[in-house]
Length: 482
Image (cartoon, rainbow, N blue to C red; front, top):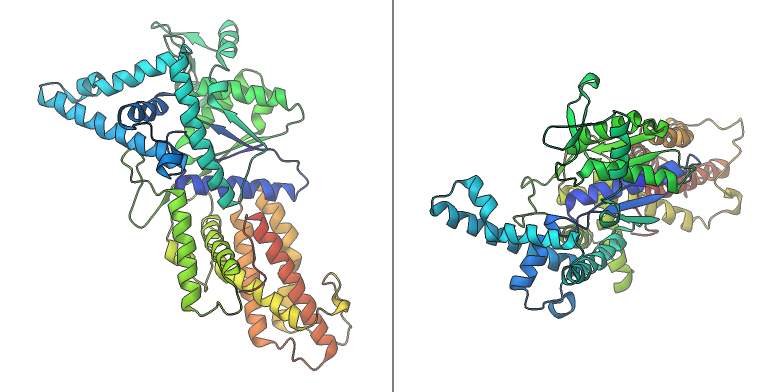
């Protein structure tokens, strides 16, 4: 089971989510090549104080606005009110401070935050009106997410919702208390001491009996292994700011006696930044996923037109080409970097048709298809296999290509074992780069020796096939012509 995406329902997906989503999706596809049966899942953080903030702001400022009436995607609309709440909250804090309150007092006493806390309590008590608004606004967000997922070409076999899972784990904590795995503190909260394992004390239930994140994660993991008895491994695709959380989670599950806890894995990845710097969602300075995708498509259009590569395409074909190049550039740029590393994403650099980029690899594939098309796709080529007579002496580039072709299965295995799609990405680039040199230095269609010509066409076909398969594993489409 590979978990990825896992968004909040108070804002649209952003740049960080894109790295998470394409990383999880790609790893799932690569694991399939090793014979694993894969379940792609997401858990949606659809409850809590952050959701109530958007709901309150919509009640106060919304005037009944909907995605239909505004023409906005639902996740963007809800995100707009999350930002509105933050503006109101900051204004109230400033007023209270000017009246002599400390910053800490002002943050607790601001009317808007008190109202949000009251709304959360009503939600937990099942208040009909609050629940109805919550369902309506969450549905707006889900509809918006679906559009973004579709544009990215990803999906899930199952979606879990935190509103259904947040109470899981409470019973497990009680069982752990009885077995002295956990203990009650003086203030009534329940904790576990992990200092002997090099970690700290961890609270697993608050003093008022409410659960914390880890309580839910303990319960959800146990439920998943119950739900799928043949589940061998659970992989969480989550940013590296949660490294400690997952160390604690897996250790607690082991202490509770679950042997499969050792098979849980945190695919930890570094944050993504743009040349302008970090992102903050409360202030509305997050790089929105949809805006970024639109920018990638328009950059692809501009670059392609500047290079004059648009002859012979109708408008529909061009639109599809720009989207293929734009999303391919974005995905490849992110996946070629080792997941553990923090990265700087530069849209302009990613769309370049030269160097280690998606469009360069896509262009190489299209060039191969053009060669095969012009050759009349010799029937002797078959699947691209070719019996080489002993009399033929291979040149250096032919040898290099054959060597690279043979390495593909080993690269897939290594990428799968290390949970690292960057191995596949960089191998595909290396293959495309060597093929480009081969194409430039070795005549294919004009080669007079028919045996050598057949060999070179077979090499071209094999390279094309591997580039297509490899890019598909990264979630990237390759066009037949460019």
